[in-house]
Each structure stands twice: as C-alpha cells, then as structure tokens.
Image (cartoon, rainbow, N blue to C red; front, side):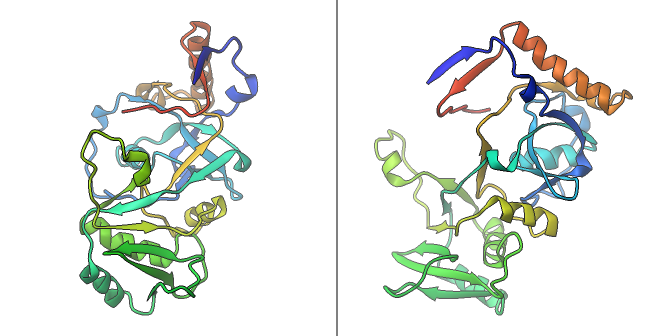
Length: 275
C-alpha cells in the first residue's frame, strides 16, 4: 500500500464534482427504513460525495450509500454533493450473503406466499445453475427462479426472498470462510447463505428506471477513482445561494485542502474502517 500527497489535483477529476438536486438521483436499492423520523438539526456535514453515474433520461444512478441518501431525503435536504463517474469506471462486487435465521419452513412460506412468481428446485448433477438464486441450507442447495424470467432490474425471486428475510432474521454480506480461518474472534455461524446470479450495471440502471429496486447491502459498487472526506457543511447546501455558487464552493473546498497538503492518494486496495 502506498500513500502520498497530490502535487497537483487533476483538473478533470475536479470537474466530476457537482451539486445535484436530490430528485435527480435514483438509488437502485430500496429504503429499509421508510418510516424513520430524521431530525434535520442532527445533520451537520455530508462526509463523502455521493457516487453517481448518468442515466439516459438526464437523472443519475446512485451507486453506493443508499441508506445515508434516504436519511438525507427524509430530513428534507434537497441538494447533494456528488462525484460523477462514467459507466466504464464502475465495478460491481458480489459476495455470499449470510442469513441470520432461516430454515425450510421459511422457504415454504416464501414459496406459498409467492406462488406463480418464484420457482424452487433442488440441485442435481444435471441442473443448470446459471441465472438462478442459489440458496444453501442444511447441506442442501436450492435454486430459486423468477416467473416470468424477464429481467428489468431486480429479479422477482431476489426481491421476494429478501422482503421476507428483512422482516424475519436479517442478513449481511460475508467473506469466504477461508479468508476468516485465522481470525481470533468467534465467527458468526449463519443459518443459510445465498449466492446471487451475476448482476451488471445495466441491471442496476434498469432497477432505478423501472423502480424495480434491489434489497440494500447485497451488492457493493465502486470506482477506480474516488474522492472521500469532503465534510461538506449542510448549512451551505440549504443556503439561498445558487447551485452554481455551491458547486464552486465544493471545488474550492477540495482544492484548498489539496493546497494545504491534507490530501492523500492510495494505490492498490484500501480498507477504510468505521468510515
């Protein structure tokens, strides 16, 4: 890992920093806490610019931090600082998803409640697993598929499965067991696990455009260049100045920190804990 200070902030990179109306930003994940009350006064700064990419209709796809986005939306904030990246710069990371509490009775409830929408089959040596949701439970593997198979955003099998799991036990992305084998801490034993079919950026774009959203925190999306820790004051966002003036302030804020030698660039994998 190398860390060093920018000598010159790339002008082209600075131009990717914008202030956008929140109504133009479209998440691909649904809001897990739509009824939460958020106190506007509790929000002082926006720590990181939101990572977005343009959509064909002039709106922008939100690529990460959807929970924070929904919090700010529910607080009544109408403008957000963003970093705009292009489609070719986007990377999607998929991992196994662990289920905290799940058994065959839960699977039965999902299938009964969504008959005609979700098809389930056990895996044999001849089973084609491509494009299926893979559910591993009690040393058995099940494949879940959507009916119909037409895909415009989040597959029905995924949304119905996680709507149930979200209310009955919860889930989280996990590392592969071999990556954790030397840990000194007790590793949580999940009741079951899920592997998703491959998800593309086009799937995420369709999810936002068709309002067929994915569950939160089952995918990680990133970019090869990222600006973090701008600590943009909310008081500036809600001031009566124009969006153009706020955008100038955003860029000058970044350049000021670069000139004060408070900016670092990292090459290779970077792990920011508790950010």
